[in-house]
Image (cartoon, rainbow, N blue to C red; front, side, top):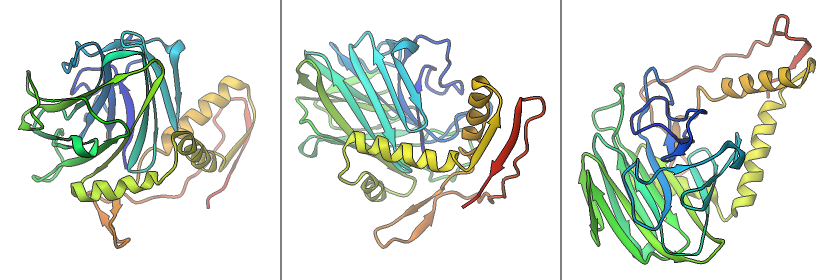
Length: 304
């Protein structure tokens, strides 16, 4: 139902990740990453150290592709300016982050609900942040909201929220055009902080139910489960002949063909499905053909 991506582009930029960029502004939940029709319901998470910088330019960090691993089921990058390693792995409606911090008295995580109408609330007694984003580019209902719940495994020693360009320390709740939260803690060198994230187009309660997809699994177990799911789907087509670059091209295209259409329903506590989109997309059978002049001699397809 959701995708996650490192964000190099500015808020609202349809080119949300550009390979030639050298700074990351956050890690964004996205649904329709497109420079054509843009996105909807997005929000971002970003670790920082030193100062509780929430502005998307000031919090941005330099990164190198040498310190980056990108797979369908796992992402990892070293944020050089904050000396933080960020990893994430998703399920259908949830995700888990693993942040490895340096030794610092002032380590923070920024949650940005973006502009065009948003809400945020910090619940320190539960190590939790909730909020919603209404950001969209049209084609959604009038009451559209993407509700999110984020749970951390480390108590907060700092809490603040921001509304538009103003940071308010100690303020736990904000509603405005553009809001977000900053939570912080003291960290030791190499200390790991996890964040569980889930979202829903229905309600906060449904987002909490969606978070159960993570179960009691640790981060590495979720990575392996994600790898198994993608291997199951990508192994439905086997190719022969060609060189390594052609294999990479073929399976990269195959991967992209599996991104849409996607699951657009949520399962409530009674195990009933609720459609969360107004437009239903029909699945059609896949027709597999060899690519002309690709060097690939045959393609074997199967459907389960």
